[in-house]
Length: 399
Ligand code: GLU
Image (cartoon, rainbow, N blue to C red; front, side):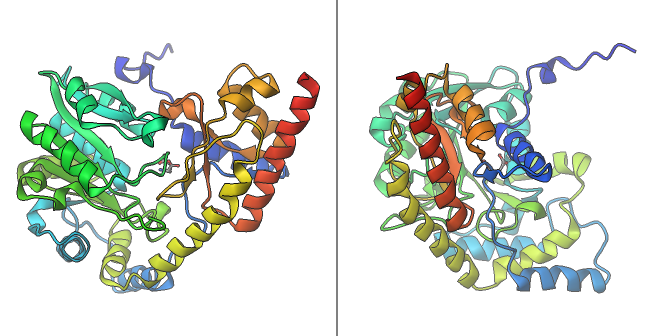
């Protein structure tokens, strides 16, 4: 039988972050000594108190459907978390619990976009934003966050990108893949443009808890009532509590949008897994002690390997302020080693240096590669050493 796929998935490619991670795991299973710096996935186990709460809920028989927007107790815990961290008030009816932050974004685009509506996406961007926008019939409009400007976009760039079809802009701070964090002033200025043009702000704050040095996470929603009303906040537990596989995220904001998202969820996922929701209640109600421990470990690793990374010939890198990625520009290294482009270079890093990294093309930044430092310091040091040796040996051959 000839299979004809729907038009809208024909151009859909698999997520490069997940695909490379899977490939690295497969190679490792075959006995190859691969160091995986691909996935944005903390290497810590989920804190025990969260696991215990989930197990207890199952033993108590909480194994049935929940409301599509999530358990009332979880939505209340999320309301309290936002009050604690951002100082803003939401009503539980303005919260939907989703199957990870990714699903919150997917559902959001589905309910706000009509065919041809535009969403402004700063580059470099996380791989799934443009695909999700397109799947909802929307058009991604890219605005370049240049390396000279710490990969951030400016208010005038934002304003220039706005058309009468613009529905929303995505702000992801701390950023995946660059690790950059927008300051309060920068967010205020971007916010002014959004308010002036009545653009919805999609604020992806999944790396909220992972900020380093003097940097601070600010949510654009906390800066004024107007901005709060215009923002849909996206967050989740994957990165902060090392709960990637649990798939618990949320969206907070305008009630009409949240209700539409809930209606859509009721026809797709019904509800996020009940057991995971019970774990999430414990996570959001517990102290942030283990979150802080993990944050500190990431910061130590970053500080330990950053200097070594920029010693690799042809690598330059802005020091990240948050998240757990390094996003070096390797244009020069690609030239020095004689590869055609960064994709080929990254492929060779995997096959020859045995280090899995994500090429920047999937993030709209073809001169960069992304390295996740959510792995042990020992492995990170080995990985950087391998990459250095690889580049140096290829340079000798091409010279
Ligand atoms: N968000 C993480 C990453 O960028 C996990 C994989 C994914 O969802 O893209 O690596």
